[in-house]
Length: 350
Image (cartoon, rainbow, N blue to C red; front, side, top):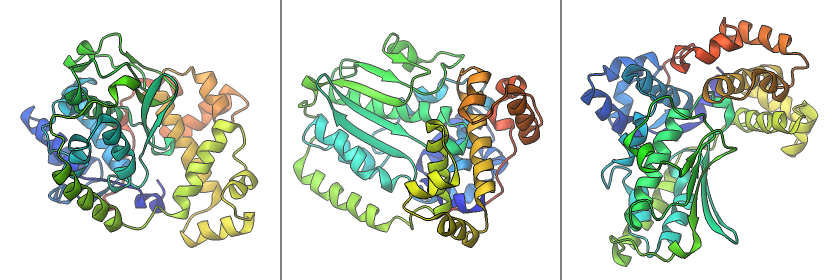
């Protein structure tokens, strides 16, 4: 793991809430957090910034300890109003569903400096999508939980289930079922290209029952203050890692491609990485390792295709790399819970 990437964070609130569900199910959550490289005391303040890799791993641990890889959908679908504080109210107090969805995209940077929410409309649907960079490794459980949260809130605006047309998730289908999945049977597709929710355009004018223009102005001001208060942006290493990830998907992750896409020369890119204690080769290797783990654990993409996507000319070369990285063959890693991977070191994101 590259230390400079620890500047990428999510707020502690989701982990703090997940901890309540863990303790209700007799999971030793403090021990689980320590196993993930987290200090339990950092969750006392739900607005604290938590390193992304450790946060995502904690969600994977929850599913493993519970022996249920779909329960997290229900945990966050049933989250009480106010659980997400200001982020909840800029949606629920908005004048319409459309405004609420736009607010989620607008204020997402206060929740994380690397997770993104995008909102757009086309001829047929309104589309709300969210994503994490692939270079963090597996994040299916976090994505399941966030999908449950978003859909639970959207359904509060319309009749249950009727506000949603379709959900798509970039992870494979869970082995277990849940109340959320049963309720949305036929509405959710897995192994998709991205995580997104499709809504009918005619639903966008729906007014939330809790719409309140006076309260909305108050929470909007608080949300703007949160945006101003967030820490420094992610490091150059983080930006370069994301460009390498994009380059792998495009078939070119050379230093020339990455430097050009960032408006830098090769030398200035190398100098920036040296200043953060790393190198292009180390970042490139870390990104490929993390993406390999995510694709093998989170998806059903064939191993041969993963090897090709990561720039390996032969499956045998990819298999050797996976063995070097994880001590397991690709098929064995696919069967291994992501929480069984090497743990991040105890650290606090800035």
